[in-house]
Length: 365
Image (cartoon, rainbow, N blue to C red; front, side):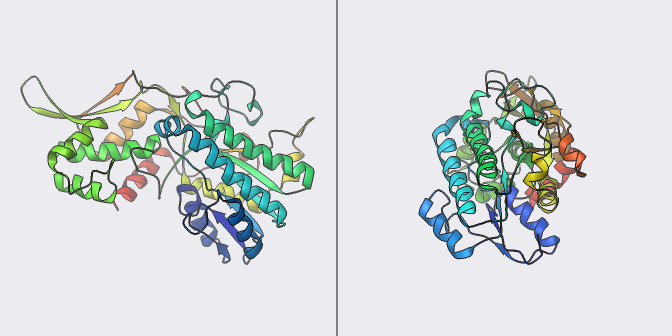
């Protein structure tokens, strides 16, 4: 890519897209094209067709997607499969029609089987059953990477698919109704700390920025306590009749998860755009040209319980954290094998403890 090449970043306001835009700008790329969802509905086939005809981007980064945590994935199953299929079908096909030189498609490691070998290599895709709670989203992402692969083989396009592990960082989603585990935990423990300190002003400031189910800082203390209680943040009476703040989280706390700082992920994506073509990936396939996608991860994992303890220490919450084993855990392990990416010369730089510190500073700001 040249510094003046026209690059369209779909989903530039999100966690992934904003990190990639920041990286591109820092590296001196000057011709970046964006459209917010209100300006361009990527589910609208005609609108996407018109946009590509008018703008003629040379490179496309497809970071736009309908995303969420285990609750959102399980609740909005129809939306997750329909919207993601619509978005990626439109963007990938119009990239082909309009002669885009290279496209980067971002998926997720939830594409892999529930009982995949650990760490997960790229070639275990489609070898077993998916995790039920996020199956619609996973199927959409599998369709996207296979569409890229199929277009490369039939039409000679240069599309690369990457599967990042669990991401966190600036511009993350802290909406407790739809967020992923790490940002949700940061916010819940922050609110629990405010409640522990009796700091209702801080709670109201938080709710004004991000209302929970319509409850904002203008609500009464009783309404605020009720919505916090619904999301597991509550005050309980101890044996000596004192109030102690407790936080209840979903599941057993035993699942292991891998986390990658979003700006590290962005660096990996730009590295691949600059240094890797489909022909390079294709050359690594021995027989059939399949599973040409690339994992982006750290190769390190931590339990959800350990994660809560690190965040609790960072925020200095002294209350109790409990786990509700009646709620689902999701996949028990989901550790990527990033050896293919490491062999290309890229490794992450931000470790989890440092990332959580940065994440909380970002949240407070």
